[in-house]
Amino acid sequence: MNIDKLYSDLTLKTAAKLVLIVLDGLGDIATKEQGYVTPLEAATTPNLDALAKDAAQGRMTPVAPGITPGSGPGHLALFGYDPLEFQVGRGVIEALGLGLELKAGDVAARANFCTLDSKGIVTDRRAGRIETEVCEELCDLLSKKIKKVGDAQVIIKAGKGHRFVVILRGSGLEGPLTDADPHQDGALIPIAQPINEKSAKAKKTAKLIKEFYRLALPIIAKKKPANGFLMRGIAHKPTIPLFEERYRLKPACIAVYPMYKGLAQLVGMTRLEGPQTIAGQFERYLAEHDNYDFLFIHYKYTDMHGEDGNFEAKKKAIEEFDAALPILLQKKPDVIAITGDHSTPCALKGHSWHPQPVLLMSAYSGSDKLERFNETNANRGSLGLFEAKSLMRFMQANAKMFDKFGA
Image (cartoon, rainbow, N blue to C red; front, side):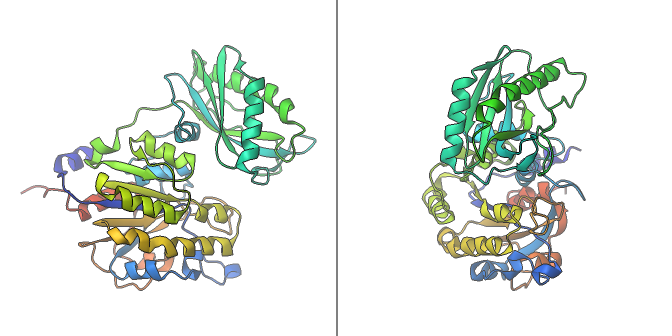
């Protein structure tokens, strides 16, 4: 039997309120250099500790053992979609998150401004994390200079910081392509290639991306530090089942960064715009509590500092989150899950394959009798190690949303 069909057949509509809080890249590893503790273990978190005493804990494999996920697969798994079945290009997610409408046949790419040396080698993949205003100026310059490549229209829109989106709109286009991104400093920008070498549409798209680079790089060549750009997640929009139909929950998203808004929008969540701080996001939750059954709240800064290898900043970001948590608890949901979409260890300065910790609390979760929420205690928790795509089903079960199976 198809397991998703079974869940659907057993699903009951209730009045329960569910909240999923994602501290992006929360998981970490304990190393000698860090005193054998993780940022989550080192952080002072009295509010998370209070929740932990009445919660269950565990660890989640975001995709499969040993596989390092991008933010797209990581979040889709948290939303209950098998990331191996539903593969979505990062460009599509970012475009939706910026409020752009994607038409049939559009190909979108997520792009970063970067710094190139005189030989075209990437020396800083994020161009020193330029300010959003600088990114907007560069995108405006490119948009004015490049209206088309070949027979395709070019749409460019700035995101936050060094990030932006490029959309190709025309006939006979298709993804996915390999990334025009070396994913590390000290290398040349690779040429995007069709992943499906038999696809004529993907081959055409690859030629247009190459032409876009040829036209765009000279325009920004003298713009230090952002004199180059990288493109990844070059793909078209897939068909994906809607969250509300899948879970019988009316969902909404409270996030700051476009990518996470786009991921939520992709599965049919309502985007609640405005808040820029975690305290503001929790205040918005209070205001919207009665309007939705499921709220996804995203917090970026744990991941950002992990990618910078900044242990103290990641620890502080966790503490800032914890300090704001009482705002949300003014209207405590029936089920609350707190986790990450993946681990971003400071020692690795990037995403990793390590299972992320998860805390799950409801009237029926039971207590694991653990005093704190962290990786070490999550290893001891009753949830054990499970695939992230099952978290939504655990949340539904804790909301008493499933009828009994069998006699």
